[in-house]
Image: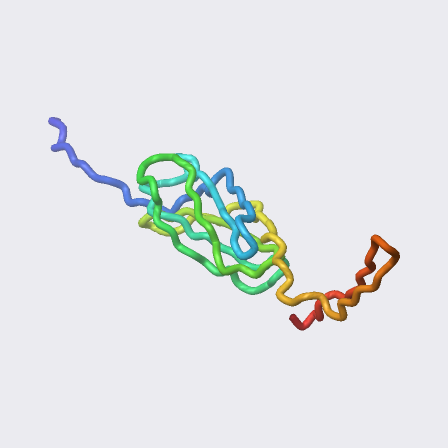
Length: 151
């Protein structure tokens, strides 16, 4: 018999099956962490990439992750993405993970989850009980106590 007419169709998208690659976390201040990553490999995307969800929480905290959604900044290009988390607590360890998403949904979170610390904050109070005493013709002795822990 003669062939039928050609039929064209497009399969629907699905959520990514791959995770973002090369995830790095660097302390960028006393209250911020800068996260960088590359998109998942193309065989794990299953459709045009729309963006990323960054998940974070304090380390060893059993609470749910807080998510920040970011659009792709370089559409169609497999370049490194970057985001700076701000407003974090000083001298604290955080757990960070990232997942990519398409129109069809989100992929899995990156593993292993990256744990990094913000920089140490300067004290908010001065030492207490500062006293000075001469210790000879060319010397001076200084005593003090650390700032109270309630500062």
